[in-house]
Length: 290
Figure 1 (cartoon, rainbow, N blue to C red):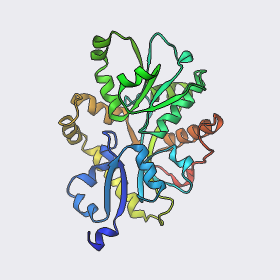
Figure 2: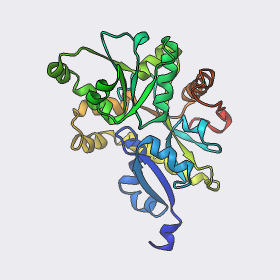
Figure 3: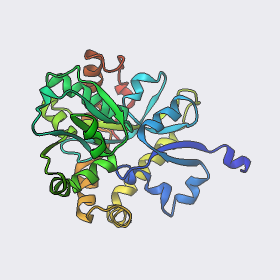
């Protein structure tokens, strides 16, 4: 590795479909080669992104927002987010129709995201079942429901579970309820559901303005090239093109605007109130919409 490469900023990026517009310039010409001289990209689960920032193995990470409350010193980079203001499709709570939420005795939890777990815990408090235990398991709906009364899935496994919903019923005859966590959150709180933001590492030095500009420019170019992203992902992901397009243009919101900042504030307030996360205050003045 050259000395120039040694100086590159290390980015921990989420390896799901939903960040694809944010990553456009890092993966496509004409800016891909220039950015590769300044940044090194590694892809992983949301929880792994947070872990790398926490222990200094990354300088920038697309992290679940819950990590902000558990890792001191992280700074939100303004402009970009992965959020939803209605239905999101890729955050599911699945439970047996025969057992209402107030009677669920255990929840199998996809371990890929701390934030989804925190949202789910808050929602169960609001549903009157705040003490339900969560069992960490990998994202396999059949296995999860063998071990628990309900399961939550995030990201690509959730999208696939929705696509396979009818097939699973024909195969098992088991009637399940598929709840969209973002829709449930919005219905109960009126707030945007914010999953992830770009953040700077606590141990790293200050990030210059060019980093934020690079990230925002990449997001903007990605949103201008949705058709190309749809074509790319439809070749490697067994979901119809129109579903991918709707997901990226309607279900996911990528601009960290005032509504999303308010959503984060409400999330952290409720998470602290229910003992789900330590108290955390969003530095609103640093997050002007861009």
